[in-house]
Image (tube, rainbow, N blue to C red; front, side):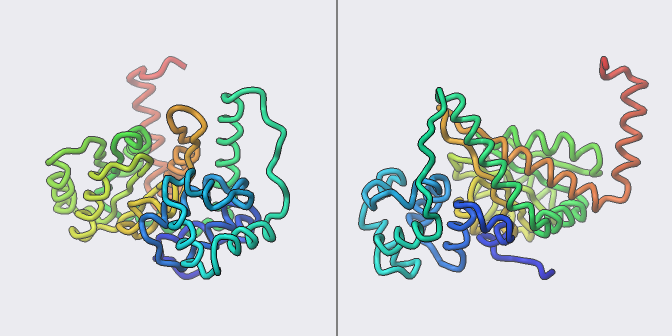
Length: 293
């Protein structure tokens, strides 16, 4: 299977995923050059995939935080005569009404939304090639940079913590500032060829700038983001989408976390010494009495 380089297509093309509303929307947007405002509308539609066929252009504009004419221009950019034609197409491809059986409270709804995000991730992983390609890139980098700022810092830390058990040189970038570029330069001098980025909303400008700098430095950028239309997409060689939950005051990120663990597995497959290093760690941990179990 040939490798994909279009960051808006990677990880979205598979037969199973084509059956979910969000995956159908992703495929509808593929191949179109969208403006930042149009990407915002697309991102909103993916997150509200079950509702979109029943929303007016005014309602969609309010949800996306854009103007109603922007929604009309977005529909035309996709090849439709206007928003009514786009909505008609969406209703024909997903004719069922949105579910009306509301759960008891917002906490249950947030859990159900995360379950839906995980199901969508499972559908995307029906085609393992993008993740396997990412794993090869991570494993082949003598020094591996892992970037995640603000909301994504915990995802980056978790990946780097486990990756360091099998990869010889993992360098975590979880704090911004003027030294970020210096640390990228130092990693490149040490032989780094790949940077893994976790990018979650709200997207810090520093992350976008850091990825642009990493690309200029010659690094291949693999990104886990909440959407294929995230601001980091244009600086990513391979983007793997994993939606976040938005039902609570602060976003939930079960899918990005799980995708990070999947990437760890794929990376281990490309590291011949991974199992030996894990076994060595277990022996030393027992000798030092690190764990109580």
